[in-house]
Image (cartoon, rainbow, N blue to C red; front, side):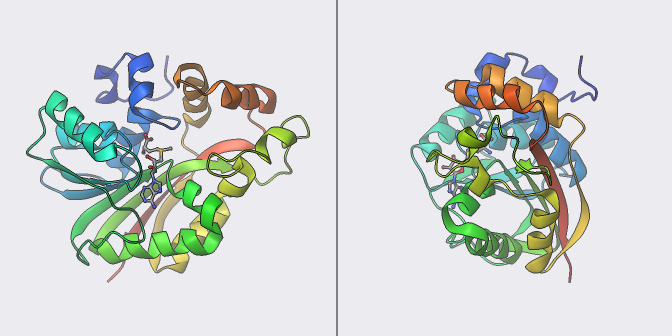
Length: 248
Ligand SMILES: C[S@@+](CC[C@H](N)C(=O)[O-])C[C@H]1O[C@@H](n2cnc3c(N)ncnc32)[C@H](O)[C@@H]1O
């Protein structure tokens, strides 16, 4: 039984399927958690950064009545989003674009909200804090004044890496070791502030560890990650979120 209830995500109860369509802890429950925090209202124009298969994008359009643009520069995301849009019956309310932050080519001040889950940390892993800041600055640029940004991603607690997991989190190239992708909540919050956002709230979601557990159990190909999570026992790996506002 969940500590919190996610009535919209509860309708998508086959987690084995949900985790083939999403690629991070929390999946649709995390999207619902963030969309309630923003809050996303019917008719809002929302940008989903790192749309992947478009499953969360279509969920936002269907369950929150938003118009959603999903962007992703890699692979066949746009094709997968189009397939999901038909399945969700929201083809008239979602658009997929094969672009990424910071080079979105989207108009300035054109979105009511931006949401991004388990994406920007990959940019940090590849391009460091400077690349992460450029991505945030682009998100700030495309938001309307007063628009809200909801970010959630894998993070690490402000403690040394436990020795049992050090070899596993400091090596690998998917696209960089976890130790280079993940930052603390405080460091992430400071970067979001550094591009001009006002912080509304920043914390670890109450279900963070249950969501990681779900990811480890259900996500195809996550066996190595699941091994790290079991060895870590909640000491270093976490998930954090930041809700921020573009101030006038
Ligand atoms: C780990 S997946 C998670 C995405 C999705 N939110 C989910 O939970 O399923 C990260 C996604 O970010 C995309 N990505 C990589 N670089 C990006 C960029 N510069 N801008 C936007 N998305 C990017 C990848 O193609 C991938 O689909």
